[in-house]
Length: 342
Ligand code: SF4
Ligand code: SF4
Image (cartoon, rainbow, N blue to C red; front, side, top):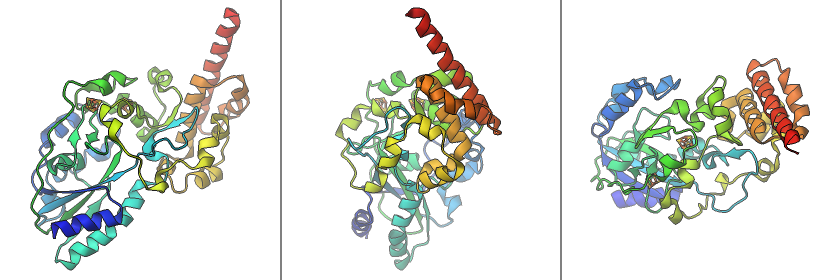
C-alpha cells in the first residue's frame, strides 16, 4: 500500500513522497515563541489556530498519517529576467493550484482504501516543514527553509492528512554542519539567528505579504528585486546537486522575461491581470506590484525611466505615488552625483 502511494505520487508529478506519524509538531513551541517575538509581522493568519497547527489530529479527527509530497521547481539555466528579479518559485504558474490538482488522484486512491483525507499546499493549519523533517524528506536549514539532499532548497511541499495508518519513515537529521552562508548572504540581516527569520526585515515579506509602504531603511537593500528574494537559497551549497525540473509550467514566460522595469511600471490593471493570470504574483494585485517596481527603479533606474515615474507620482493610489516619488528622488540624486564626479 505504501509502495503503491509512492508510485502513484510519482505518476502524479511529485518528486518525493514520505510518511510521518500524526503527532504533536516537534517544533511547535519554537513556532509559538517565534510568534510571541512578533517575527511574523502583519501575517496575522499565522497566529490563528495555534493549537491546531501544533496538532494535526485537531485538523482531522482520527488522522493517523501525514503524507508529505515534494515537487521540484528548479528551472536550471532557463531564461531569467534582467533587472527586476523575481523569486524562482514565482516564475511560472501558481504551484498551489497545480499541486492541489495533482493530489486529487492520490486523495481518490486513499478514499478507495477507506481513508478520509485533507490535502494542503501551504493552505492549511499544518507545520509542513516540521512534518517534512519527521518524514525524512528534508531538514530545517539555518535559513528556515527545508533542504533535501537531492532537490536542494528548490521544492514545494504538499501534505495529505489521512485517517489511514502507514509505517512512518525515519526522520531527517540536519546536514547544515558549520555552514552559515545563508545568514551571511542575507542583504537585510533578516536571519536573526540560525533557524529564525524576522519577517519584518525579510525582502520576501516586504515585497509580497506586506500590504503597506516598504520601510525606507530597506528600500535600497532590496536592489532590483520586484517579487521575493532568493539570496539565502542561491548560496546554499546543497543546491549544487539540484537538477532542473521537467515541469515546464514553472518556467518564466518569455514575455515576462523580456519586459523592462519601465514597461512593467506602465502596465494597466487589465494588462496586470492578463500577464499574471496563472502566476502567484496576481495575489499581490497591481498597486503592490507597481510599488515594488518603483523601488527597483529607484535603485537601478536611469533618466529614461523618469517619464513613467512622473506619471506614477501623481497616481490616485498613494502607495504607488509615494514609491514613485521616492524613485524619482533616488534617480535624480544619482544623476547629480554622477555629474559632480565628471
Ligand atoms: S529571502 Fe532574502 S531577505 Fe529573506 S531571509 Fe532570505 S536572503 Fe534574507
Ligand atoms: S546555506 Fe548552509 S546553513 Fe544555510 S541552509 Fe544551506 S547548508 Fe544550511
